Amino acid sequence: MSIRENLLRLKQSMPPHVKLVAVSKTQAVDVIREAYDAGQRLFGENKAQELIAKQPGLPDDIQWHFIGHLQSNKVKYLVPFVRMIESVDSLRLLKEINKQAGKAGRRIDCLLQFHIASEETKFGLDPEEARSLLSSESYQAMKHVRICGLMGMATFTDDENILTVEFRTLRGYFESIKNDFFAHDDAFREISMGMSGDYEVAIREGSTIVRIGTAIFGERN
Ligand SMILES: *Cc1c(COP(=O)(O)O)cnc(C)c1O
Image 1 (cartoon, rainbow, N blue to C red):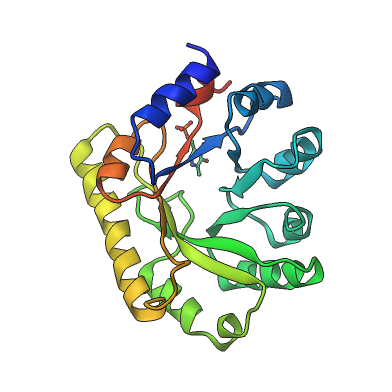
Image 2 (image 1 turned 180 degrees about the horizontal axis):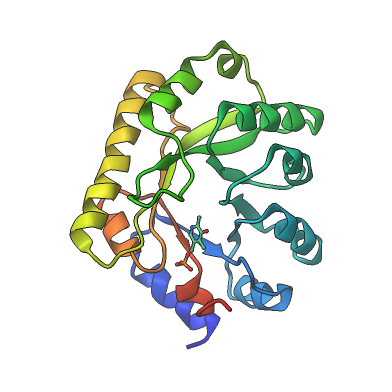
């Protein structure tokens, strides 16, 4: 099936409030443009260098979500154009985003990435770390970042029970952090969870943003 057909089929299978991030990592600019020409505007990349290289060759109205582990020294290159950084996993990184966004005269939407998978390798905060970040004076003084919710990656498995438990866990973290830190902040409303293999379970468990690569572009090399 073509990229256009894949996008159409995915959109039709999702409730309208769920945002679809087309994960274009490893895809060439002309392939990304094919998705753009099919109407897709929201794209995700997980490597700063790759995004910085591809972005200038693509239309300005693409909304880029950064979804991978981000080193502080790369932040300044993304901040001028990135729409959302979904993968904030430390106060140190958030400080750098705030600083660079200030210089660029922008405010950057961010998600806090949580560790919910059983694999050791996946980055992310636990609830205690997130609470200490949100309680810190340095976070509370930040004017150039806006935290809009949480992001997480489930274990790589077909086991629906495991996926359900992990997504439900992230939803639970979202509810309690919303309640304790963002009760009166309407911007805090996103739960980014679900990829090609598990987005249906994620949506059932309350996802508002799914990040899908393979099911749009095919297997990556
Ligand atoms: C690659 C990637 C995805 C998309 O994975 P697919 O299985 O190709 O849909 C989603 N989120 C993150 C953080 C990724 O790195």
